[in-house]
Length: 260
Image 1 (tube, rainbow, N blue to C red):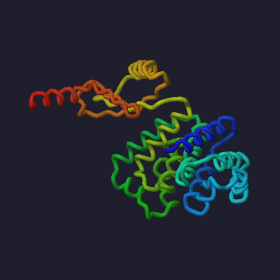
Image 2: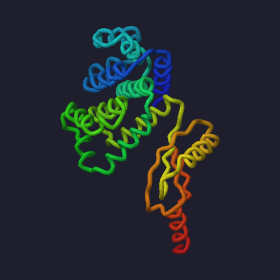
Image 3: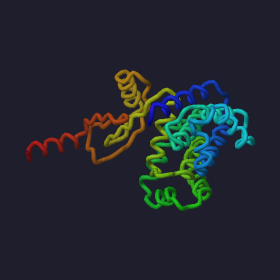
Image 4: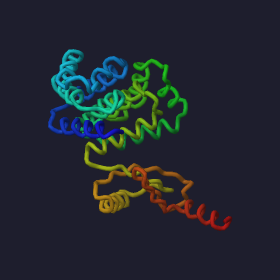
């Protein structure tokens, strides 16, 4: 990610912070992301740094005149920024749509998206159907709503159905994991994936979250994975950091030392 894109993402996040949005706004932003991704001419024009920012902003008004003032305003903010590439701009619209969903829906989006990720991981046929590049986008979105619509919040359903309609080169699980991180960032949190041999109690989750929050200096939300293979102990992953205190890890380390 280039420095121009980093600054553009920060500007779009700041614009969202002062905007009044709802799930309809987020839905419009997802639709705009699909429209821009589907037109190299449009994405190229919006990301063309040789064109005056005001002109790029005016293009948003012309192309997306049917959208709400809130969605148009946020898209205009994106259009007047400097982006390292047209792909980054398209990605920036999608990120903004996910952030808008997190702002509009107070449900536990991180936890629900994590459960959807687990569901996809455990069902290869579902992952294949949702990740197929040549499948009809709307059909994949309808499949998501059929499977999780009654079990998840409207925000979670919107994010998942939107992501599978525009997979790009990403695997479905990777797109969902990224969405979890974006939602957490919008809410000022960081996600920790905790793997244990048996479920944590509520008190254990609270103590672990508090300890990790003190260590990392940011609020930590926990996504829990129960895996009998770890035998005991706990494994924590936060971004690229891994804290592995599981018994299975210790045994593997011991076997390695004995073999060496």
